[in-house]
Image (cartoon, rainbow, N blue to C red; front, side):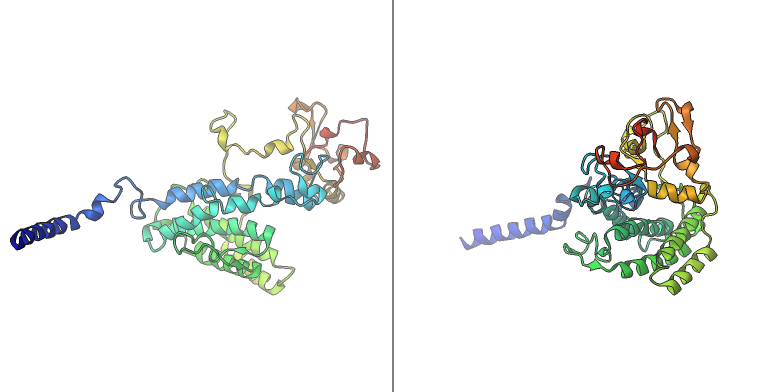
Length: 351
């Protein structure tokens, strides 16, 4: 019996030793993407796309009417123009928050992964720093709308098992974004590898530098009322670095052309300002009157009146024949406003 047991023990030991070297390989999916074999460039592209169109109209439908750039006659909820009536709505006001931190297509999570995967890799230096610049686009918009938000610990659920990130103060977020812009923009170098996944500037380092310094200028100007000296320091740095000088420098994600290719990527919010029918969006009387009284040359590019909305040839961009719509009214209460003209179709007063 002892001899039989010894033989079995020896055989078992041999089997265990033989399996030990391959056990890990047998339990590893050969088709799974790993950090070593996965390009963060794909994440960068997706982050750009999702974050460029990821607020579901929160800015256009909620904050723009709130500050009286746009107006609507719709009751709050009809077209999600909650800002026009100063009505809080969780769905409208929080869509930027939800889509920023969305685990599937949230731009901030994808971007954070791209930043981490490209860190300490010289061949991905430009990608890494472009992603850092793009991060300020996402969080600048987020903190301007909500104030204190998760920033320094955001999107670390997987990497650090941090499922309850702290809320950073808006001041700390602004300071860090400005420092990031300064460092990341300075480190962009055309000799350090091309970035082919960029859907904004096509990897053009010179344009990204202008973009980085222009973002620095923008953030610096936002500080002018609270910290004038700090604002001046950053604005001077930005101008010295080189900022936008023409419309050719503008940053935007190009949507499909008129052929209709990739319709799923078309800007779905454009219907708000449509002139082909009764759209919910009108230019607010507040900003219209302000610009008109100052002969602002941009106004004729912002608004138009169509004698026949179905025909582009009937467009009239002369501000003298236009007017803005006062905020806070609906189809019934607008009739009490002296500017209301019942003889005209109000949908002609369009952006």
